[in-house]
Length: 404
Image (cartoon, rainbow, N blue to C red; front, side, top):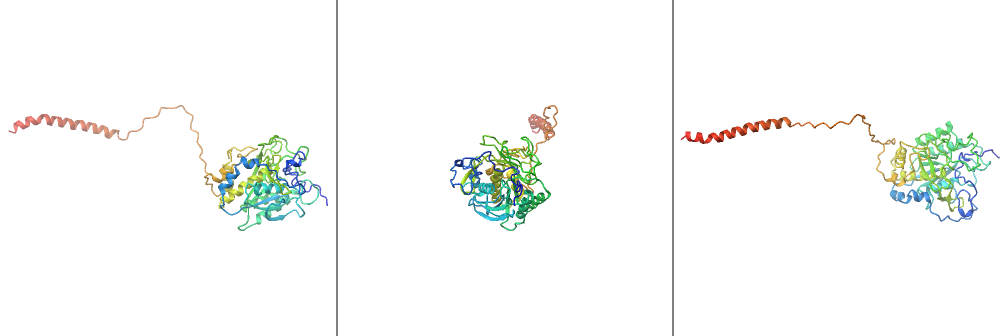
C-alpha cells in the first residue's frame, strides 16, 4: 500500500541525512548514490576526518584493553557486507536495504580499515526503509524510532548495547521523550545528529511546518538531539567548498562537533566510498565511534562519566558552547588519555578565580616581627652584662694589691 510519506521522513529527514545536491558520477564513489548494483570499486582515498582527528593514535591508546562494545545504529538497515552482531526490524516492512544511510553510518562506526572503533560490534535497529519512497511502512517516524529505542533499552546482561546512534531528526513527542529516558536509564550513551539541511529544492518532512531559515536555531525543533542527556553532534565544514551552513542547521543543543567531508565509509555495494556533503548524520556516527572507544577504555565508567571525558577534552570550552560546534570539535586521543576523574554523575570540580575588589593599590604592610621584643631585651641585657664585665676587669688589679 502506498502511504504518503513513508515515514515521510522519518528520514526525509527531517533533515535528509547524507543527501547530495546533485547526482555524482560513478567515478566519485559517492556513498549516497551508489546502490547494490553499482560496480564495487573502492575509492582508494584516505578518510580526511579519520586523519584530521588522529584516529590511529586514538585506537593505539585503547589497544586491546576491555571487551568489545556494542553500538546500535537506528536507521535504514545495514548492508554492504558489514559484520552485524544482532539485528531487529521495527518497521514491519522487511525486504532488502535500499537506503544507504544505515550502512554509511555503520561503516563510519566500525567498518574495516575506516571505522572509528573497528573492534565495536554493530547492532542493526531498522526504523525506516527508504526516505525517498512512499512505500513500505504505515508507521510515522517518531513512534517507530521510539519503538527502536525501547528495544535498545531492554537489552540487558554483559552484551547489552552501550552506545546508540540516531543519525536523523524527528519531531518531539511524549512517546519519544520517554523512550530516550529509558535508554539513558539503562546506561546507554545516546548520540544523535543535530540536523542536516535538505539539498536545495528538497522539502523537509511534513512533520516540520517550514524548513528553518539559514540562521534559525534547530534546538527547539529537532529530536532526539534536543533532549537533555543526549550527545547532539553537529558537523564542521572542514574541507567542504560549500562550508557547513550549506548543509547543516545551527543548533543550540549541540554538545560537540566533528568534520565529515570526504570521510570514507561503505556503500550498499560493499565497497568503500566518500561521504559528501557535510552531514551531521556522519558526524554523529564518528562521535559514536569515539564514545565506543571510551567505553572500551573505561569499562567501569558511567554514561555520564564517558560524556564528560568527551566534552571536557574537546577543543572548545564546556561552559562556552556555540550552536555550530558546542563545546568544540572532538579530540579522540585527548579524550582517551587525559587524566580526568569525573564523579559518577559526570561532574568535575573546576577551579574558578574569584574577582577581587577593584580598589586603589596599597603599599604592602611590613611583616609582623614576632621576635622583635626578645631581640630588644637581649640587646639591653647584653649591654649591661658587658658593662659589668668591663668594670670587673678594671677593678681586678686594685683588689689584687689590697689582698697582699
